[in-house]
Image (tube, rainbow, N blue to C red; front, side, top):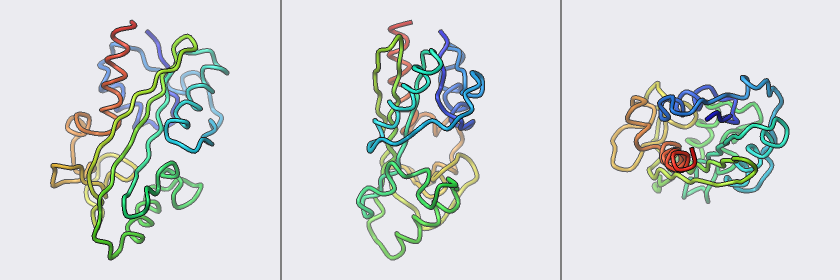
Length: 192
């Protein structure tokens, strides 16, 4: 089976391919020559995932899946949420995003947060969604050099290290994206 992963994020493609173990051929947007910016204008994480997958299916005709992820911080009323990638501006700069979160949380004791990923899969026009959540807390400073996005300032529940301090194998067992992906893989094995 061939599926397009509707993302330009090479780190996400790498993580997904690692989890799928070549059982399904994953194509990137670059592979299908989709070079335009796919709209993300929904007001929910699930809505954005569906919008991105629908765009690729409708315009390019490939069975595909898309994900959307948001960091939801309790003390900030769920921010940055759907604005996670562009929290500090449209340039989608991870350093600026992390700095904004750390500044907003300065002096706040409640550091509870969660990452939420929704994957929308479209096969032959039928849409199915899969959700994964990783609970944890925001740290006071950046730690680690692995991963991407907010990984250096998010410590998952039950661990004393950030996502950014974990190797990919461990992160891929416990992350929000991994949880949603395992549900996706289980589903794909049934329909393959």
